[in-house]
Amino acid sequence: MQSEVLIHPDGGELCVSGTLDADTGKQLVAAMTEVLARFRQPVWHLNLKDAELTDGQSLTFLLECLQLALNQGVRLQLTGLSHEHRMLFRISRLDGLFEIEAMAA
Image (cartoon, rainbow, N blue to C red; front, side):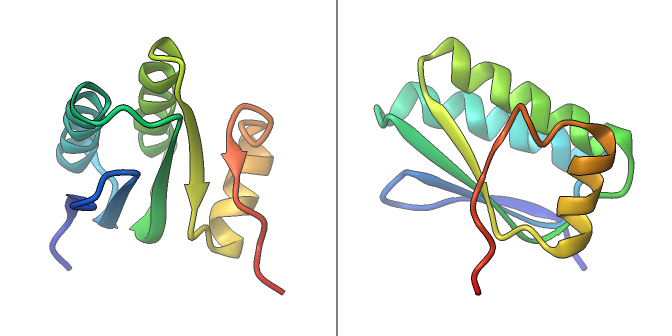
C-alpha cells in the first residue's frame, strides 16, 4: 500500500494512509505545518483510520504534530484509531497527551 498524507480541501482534517514511517512522517509534519499556516481553525483532526503505526518513530511524528498544533493554540484530535492504535497509545502512556476520539459503539 502506498503511504500518503491528504489534506481535506475544506481544512480541519489530515488523513494518513499506509505505514507511518520516516518518509510519510516527514510528509505529515510538513502538511501539519502547512495547514496550520493556511487554515485558521481551533481544532484539527488527524485521521489514522488507514494508517499503520509500526514503532516509536510513528509516535514521534505524531508528537511533533501535536507540538506544532499546541504552539499555534490549536487542538489536535486523533480520529479513526483502531483497537491496536489505542493499545499502543496506552502502553506508551501517550494517551494522556492526545485528544483521542471516543470509539463508536
